Amino acid sequence: MRLTRQTNYAIRILMYCAANDGRLSRIPEIAASYNVSELFLFKILQPLVEHGFITTVRGRNGGVKLAKPATDITLFDVVRVTEEGFSMAECFDADSDCPLIDSCGLNASLRKALNAFFEVLAGVSIASLTTPESDIHRRLGLPELGTGPAAITELRQAS
Image (cartoon, rainbow, N blue to C red; front, side, top):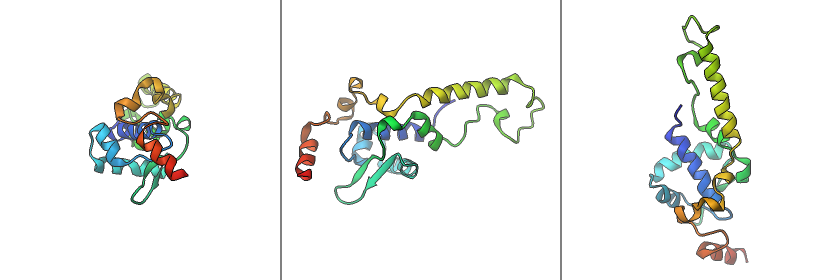
């Protein structure tokens, strides 16, 4: 099984926002960090907003941020809303014409493998992917939490 590019970048958007916690993230900045087009990220953003992972703030100083804590968003949550199907083989489809559909061990084995895959994804939160040890701030060009010009600007605006 291979996850789509949409799922890959949906997870990356969420990781960026989690690493940039407490600040608004802007799509141009996210796109530049991952070297991908802004238009592509805007398309991916829609299901993330619709399913309550991301919230948007409009306006000149707008951007995006997590709609709930990164600890409450699992990889399974994201995969479930960004992937269209999980048919690992033809026999997963309801309209399969395989004569062995009800007695074949392949179907049962693949379903078991898929469920194990989902179980692992359900145990991984976005927060666990963005720990300070992961060096994500430096790699994405983000200031460490509580430092840098963005934090100072936010403190001034909050006052």
